[in-house]
Image (cartoon, rainbow, N blue to C red; front, side, top):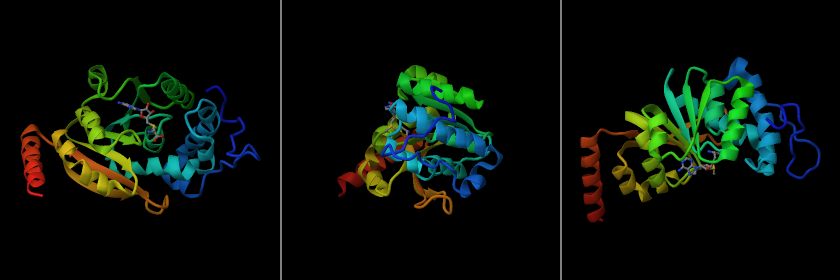
Length: 245
Ligand SMILES: C[S@@+](CC[C@H](N)C(=O)[O-])C[C@H]1O[C@@H](n2cnc3c(N)ncnc32)[C@H](O)[C@@H]1O
């Protein structure tokens, strides 16, 4: 990193340095890997802000809104799964997930060099077994390198229809897309229903995780990549429903 974990974290108003002490629940989430999560928090609050990867206003809420909120996603992922996190930016949700769940095989996909450099530097300094692939999720070479995963995750990357089109080709049949979303996810789901069916998404569910860890809990849209025959049937059914409105 350009500045290490010991550097002074930025404060939103350039006043006193922000206290980055983790909340008590962080111990429950990260266990004996909490020092790695603290190292990540410090990196975001220093180099992350300096390099424009995270806004200074986010520093006081790094634990709640970013690190714990993202690590909570682990509740939805079984042991030993492979996970591709697209549009990771400064590593969210992929890095907190990888710290909390060392059993997962995680690949971060991010097109911007400035961001992949930050990711690679942090991963190396923390000794994490996480792979970084530079590129856009929909690129054929990225699909080749990172594809066939059990899960694809994302936060704040694209509207749902486009997100499904980029995400689902990266998972195997019956693999899942887990998208961290806000409270308007139900409307987004309704709006993009046809695009989701076209992308091969089925069995959509809105889930909550991180209950008792973050408030409000993390809202996640889960969809499954359905086999070709089911994809065709879903597209036809969605078209019929749209015509009947
Ligand atoms: C708003 S940022 C969110 C970053 C991070 N997921 C977070 O929640 O803090 C969106 C990220 O998606 C990346 N991105 C945009 N289009 C992409 C694509 N087609 N494939 C992969 N990443 C993409 C951008 O470079 C950027 O880092």
